[in-house]
Image 1: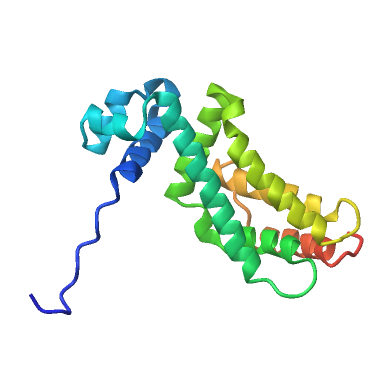
Image 2: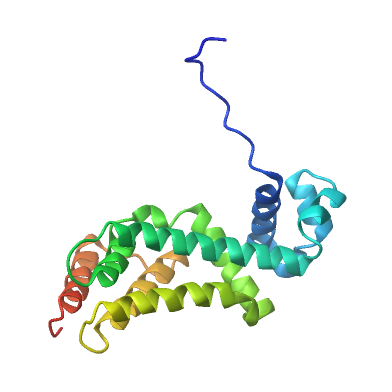
Length: 192
């Protein structure tokens, strides 16, 4: 075979396949439909193979939340690393929401479903996500903006993200520009 022939993408590892399958089940039917048998069947493995990675439904849910927390942390850190100048965390939040339209994709739709389903099932299981957002808030406090500015940026950005994620409304480009301009005023430490 020539060296320049296209290579097939490698299959995800078994743990990833199980979590992907569990995520699809939770998105389509909710936590009650997530069983070890259903996840194994959807992942294309035996129940014994699933049990090697996850001993219970609760362990799968914990795995889904941990993966979601790692993804949020990784995404934020990548956007934060690209910032220079004052108030980097506040500007990272703005960039994350306004400069990355790919953030609302199928993966995020599934993650949103997992977030809501796990919250409904057992809110305490969201501790890893809460820890990530606590670290983001620490970064925002380090921006040293006037009281409330950085947290208002985060709250508004969260609202925009979840509003779009759950199809609550669509912003026009003019609305997006006006909202961003108002939030950038806060990120500069100026009164809105």
